[in-house]
Length: 294
Image (cartoon, rainbow, N blue to C red; front, side, top):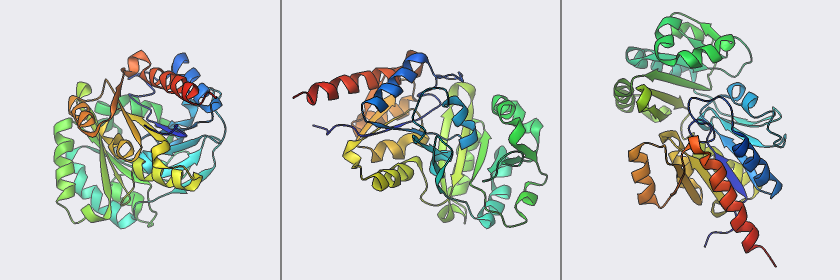
């Protein structure tokens, strides 16, 4: 029997947010607040960067000290804006990734600086074809630098590198990265959207993931992994689901991931379109309230 959950990590897109919505449903928001009121620390764990995450959460009534794990684990901060930890990808590795990944799709670097230049890419035209919605939502933070290597000439370390393209081409990019000299100096995680024929390949500092960030946060708070639950829907959530004492996979996850979930003993939530996160939290809170009755 699992001990009561004290730490709850929830993915954003495809989990808390039904694709392609940009609004958290009233039921999900109410469930997040109820979890916090019950003494559970709610952590949003997403591949999005901080500035692309906080606007969706600021009007939900969550605590200002609610933790955020962003950029797939590279940055841990609070909803109030305070940074707890920020990891960086070495500039020399980033330089090598430019030439390696450019043939496969759009390459973007994220830097730890506000405003224009936080995101750097080579050209809008290629990117707009497949990630047009992302481009539009982040336009004010994007700077175009061509060749992309020029963004790294000052030796400034980016937070992460992102490559985006078709599912097939990004699988090839992932294989090329694993076979390259850079494979031991970075970590890659894949987020796939087969219905849109889109994959985002995030390249992070070594050993960085949502799972590693969640583990560090739990250790800082004195919370055991057995007291942790994680909910996600994509491949970039796997290490977080593996580390948590209780893993929950959304019903809208890829069939291969749902198969993996069965093998690992992770439970399945209803799809994000049906407020699957709220369903899980409502059941969890009812169970914990019952088991803690005198």
